[in-house]
Image 1 (cartoon, rainbow, N blue to C red):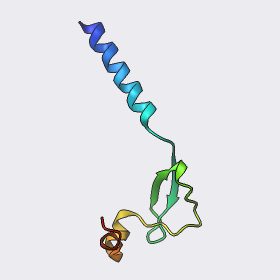
Image 2: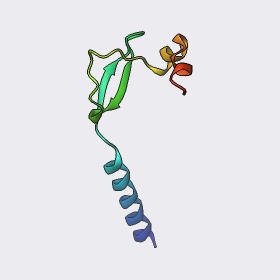
Image 3: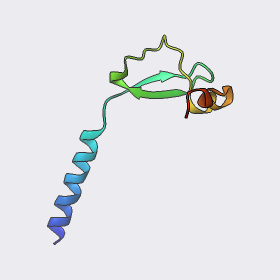
Image 4: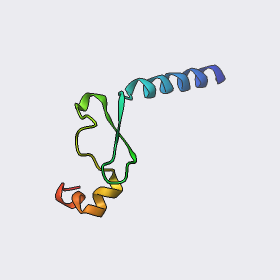
Length: 66
């Protein structure tokens, strides 16, 4: 029973790790905090990027419909 549980846990962890896409670190233009985006997004450091707190402070989250 313990082996089956251990095997199930290992399979679940492998599935979890394989489902995570690559991330890219950009920096918030408001406060400089690191912001993680998907590597496939095409976003670069030259883009204007805000973290969630700065988006809320600027009122951008209501404009974006979030």
